[in-house]
Length: 288
Length: 313
Ligand SMILES: Cc1cc2nc3c(=O)[nH]c(=O)nc-3n(C[C@H](O)[C@H](O)[C@H](O)COP(=O)(O)OP(=O)(O)OC[C@H]3O[C@@H](n4cnc5c(N)ncnc54)[C@H](O)[C@@H]3O)c2cc1C
Ligand SMILES: Cc1cc2nc3c(=O)[nH]c(=O)nc-3n(C[C@H](O)[C@H](O)[C@H](O)COP(=O)(O)O)c2cc1C
Ligand code: FES
Image (cartoon, rainbow over all chains, first blue to last red; front, side, top):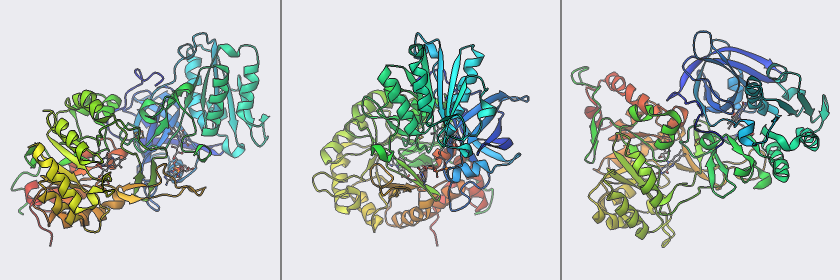
């Protein structure tokens, strides 16, 4: 719903892409795919991925492809793009993707979904952006940050993690300057939630002129959404929901809209404005 | 069955009078052609992956669909409880149908209601549109008057068909539910009520438990299982129904490729539909079609028609 019209268009069907690299990073895994046929994606978009061999290997899961945001895009010297993905192993799908080795093939469909708006599109008076990322949600924030750097738009990044074992990609994906970290276990940076850092920043000088972006676990996104709503600040959130298809076919990725009813997150999102949705925690027990 | 005597690459066939370039349909509710065109562009029109398009199920009034979560992955399949979200009849006829007509394949519209009177309105208003080649009746819904799921009762199914049959000459297809002990009895009732075809199977009733709490996972409490996990159930039911009725059977349930599609044809289906596999590959339907000539030849069939006429030993 953010800026759908000009999102790059996915080739029809899935394609096999070669794994160029896979490496460990702070408890997460980063792997690189060579997408020779696909277009360059835009910040906020995601792909549906499935390892080509042994998907549905053990016990019949994973069966469906998994929605994964890209964490970085670079030009591939021989055409197409190289895509980096940041993976937190939380179940059979992410584990299988994390086990892929250089030279393996991975089925790819996408890029899907919409893109982030630019700060001035989100907040007319915005001088810059505040990016709030949590856990694996730092991937789309890293992509957005790069885009803003390329456009000469200032941004500050606030990143939050549970502990050191769930904090991959920071050094590789974010420059050190203008990035502040929070660890819930206090092992580094601020001890506590990344939303504490956001509140501190917003109490400072120029908070009224910021455009805010966030991606992370549902509870964090809901906290960010409320902080922004309370202050009348526009915010774009990159949400997650269970997805079977990624292209509008299954209607499984329902997210409740503020006005009632549901949107399909894969085609109307994953980037939504905070005031478009009723909650960032749809389906979570806390709001059950 | 001499190999190569006829042409297995000609897959053209027909479904109760609807001429088809091939036997591959989509399962209702598993491919949104309008959304796919928005996402992938006009390649979805020029390279449409199905020989006939079945719309998602349309209801009288707009419906938001069920509360999240709506999906649960199972070994080799998934459970959904989508809850038929949609624009309602008026919205469908005014907006969606016009866009669906731009796809160059026959269009079957799936409808559902919880009373005969509404089914009559749906069938009348959909059938009068020239864009529509046929109507599929989704009967996996309780009748508000009797409280019974229409498609689980031969008598309810026959009564519904008898009420709808006089309304249109266009093909009426009854989508059978697998959640009955004897699907062939429901199929026979549909046939004697005047159905032109039956399609099967719809999803198999299923539930999932939240891995960390005592809740059920799906917002609606339960849902329907689909994908390869249900294929053997579907094959058994297609076989039993196809031998009990003379109207053509549209077979589906876990079809992933040309080989599994051919299994349904051998079990007695005239044409087949691809459902859940579309989620794994948006072009899954096209890949089934592309693989069929070789799959037919591998089993020694000279044509699709020859495979369609087989009776299993
Ligand atoms: C737009 C988008 C972008 C994303 N980007 C990333 C990314 O960059 N990196 C990343 O690591 N992840 C990302 N995700 C999340 C990832 O797609 C999901 O976490 C995915 O479900 C993981 O699959 P899995 O098999 O590893 O874990 P699952 O087994 O799917 O477990 C993940 C969660 O799903 C639930 N669950 C458990 N079992 C099932 C089941 N059988 N069926 C359905 N749900 C179940 C549980 O709540 C569990 O905690 C993204 C998701 C979306 C929608
Ligand atoms: C997400 C989803 C939505 C569905 N929606 C409908 C529907 O609206 N109407 C209907 O008759 N069947 C619906 N079905 C059932 C399918 O059309 C099909 O009968 C079933 O999924 C079995 O085929 P498959 O295993 O190939 O998916 C749906 C199935 C799925 C998975
Ligand atoms: S994931 Fe299938 S419709 Fe969104």
